[in-house]
Each structure stands twice: as C-alpha cells, then as structure tokens.
Length: 159
Length: 145
Image 1 (cartoon, each protein chain N blue to C red):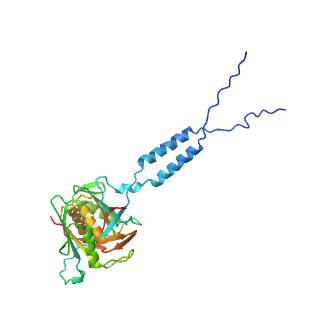
Image 2: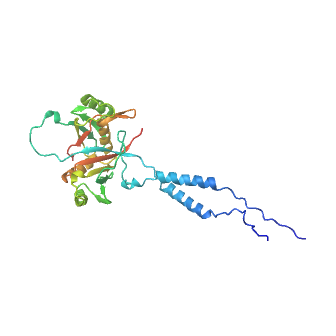
C-alpha cells in the first residue's frame, strides 16, 4: 500500500514577525533610556563639632590656614596659605603645600599628617573651593596619585 | 487549453544574522544602562576634580544633600534652606535611630552645584555637625583630562 507522505521533507517555518517586533521595541527602549553618566567620586571630610575647651593647644597640631577671597560675583580674587599671598594660581598653592608638607610617594597615604582649614568668603563659587581642595589634597603623576593633605575642614562660615 | 500558472516564490532573506546583531545590541545597552542615576538631581552640576575616583564600595547610611545653584537644599525630594534643613536631618536621624545606629555612623554626601555659594555648603556642614553628624563626602565629577 502506498503511504502518502507529502509534507515529510518540508521545512517548518515559525513566524518571526512578533518576536522581531518585541526585540526592536526592547532595543529602542534601552537606547532611549541609556544615559552615559560621568563617574563621580568623593572628597572625604571628617569634621566633628569643635569643642569649646580652652585647654592649651600644641602649635604643631594647628591646621594650615587656607584663605580664599571672592569678589561680589563669587569669583576667586585671592588665595593665601598661612597669610602668604598666592594670587589666584592653584598650581602655586600646590607648590606651597608641597614645600610645607612634602609629598608621599605615589600610592602612599599620609594618615596622621597635617590638616588644612579652609576659610572662604561666603559667596565664593563652590567650584573654586573644590579646586583648592584638589590642589592641597595631591597631584597626579601619570596614573598615580601623590597625596599631600588628607585632613580637610572648614572654618566657620563668613556672612 | 489549460495553462500551468506557478506562483512566484516569495524571496525570504535569512533573518538569523540580523537577529543575532539585535540581541547583541540589546545586551550591550542592558549592560551599559545605569539605574544608579536616581541619586543625581537635574538642578546640580557637579564641579570637576582630577583626584577623585569612584568609591569601591558605596558609603554606609548615606544622607544625600543636593545643593542647587540658588542655595536651595534638596533632601529626599523635599526642599529646604540652610535654616530649615535641621527638620529634614532630624527625620533622617530618626530613621537611623530606628536601625540602632548613631549619627556618627552616617555619611553625609554633599552634591553641590559648582556655582553655588561656598558659604551655603559651610552652613549645611554646620547644621549637620550640630546634629552630631561628622562624616562628610563632597561629591565631585571625575575629571579624566
């Protein structure tokens, strides 16, 4: 007896249209929601509230005083480290700090090192403060970071 | 006379390479998508610094304070000034106390606009200090140049 088996060799085709629709929708969703963000990092500041004790203070523990002045528009007008005027040059500030504290080797941490107190005019732009913190915190040699001062605090706000 | 008409065969392209590519693109965008952006605020443009690096581990018990250019402080979606910030901080500290932690365990992350007045940031720190918060992180953008 002859058995009819006409469909045996035919390829079964699945309809891909629905899947491709969904896949393209997913693709468009991820493309639209993608937002390439810049990497962010922190400058750590440990600042407990100053005690009002009037005990004798060791001179070696006194922080370096960094004074930042601004004009009425918030632009930086002068930098002074321990009363030494440095103009508005952050590189000069960094060189001064290197002269004062030396530099740890790249990758080393200088825990227990000196402290800097930032005393800034109220209306100075925050960006200038961060530049100053960057200058006193260290500098880069290639990919390595040389750390200078890690302890940073702020003076009382000037109003 | 009977005429044999054959329907023209539909030209079907091979979809496999396209689907492969599309799946690869989806995988690429899924990996790249960054949902941690929720910490950011549209009103804040961070200053740059070449020295900072992204933290290896997220800070414990973060209290994120956004400081806008006009000095307004945003904490948990609510707006404050330097004078009213203590209300918001008290709320955060209550949450902290419920988890049996002290204010010293918390980390205050300050995300301030680059053109905000530095004095406002000092005020924010002072108000936080008065609530026994001692650890502050000044958040800046990594400058790769």
